[in-house]
Length: 288
Image (cartoon, rainbow, N blue to C red):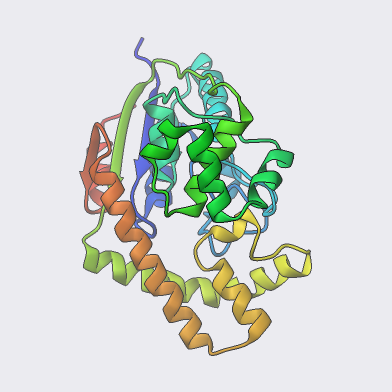
């Protein structure tokens, strides 16, 4: 009997991944695992583009916006689910715009570190940028020579790994029939979809969603607020301004982000690329 399928649906933001993932899951009676770094957060629904069919997705709404979550945690949780589904002979569709999550899981990266303790993260966050660079160069010159020392987030994450002294996370994935496909619309179509979707998100209450999060004590410094648009909307709520300017700023930021996603996907191993959602569905229609 053939192994069940593991199909990863990749692509830039607003490319139609959820629609395709759900259609393929229907066809294969498959589970769907979320691989979007911000859809894991509760209460961040409109602005992260969660599907209306949220109950179908695993690893959705599993953290609060003030909690850290990273690729190391993702692969361990996702791999556990994959083993469970494989034992039951069930196919799985992975869907999400966080390319690193999908690549690390499917390519079985073996150098991912677990999240540092909150105490260590706070200790490193209190360092100035220059202090963090100096400590990294002193304690892990090899790491310091391979990362961008002008990027504060990367420097501090590397220092956390060095000071944490932890071993890489261990995980395996079962021998599914694996396929990675991406929907990559033309840049023109991508921009059009992003502008349209941003307008729809605003109409669907994105600003109210952020107000609600702020009223619960979350703020722009929280990890969840790194999701596109959330910090900009929080600033708009707290400081005022022009809503049209806000929406245009989010559109520009999202178009730039989609461009970076397309660049990332060009280096994705074993990826089959389509420009239309219909093409992906046609190409996977023979699977069972």
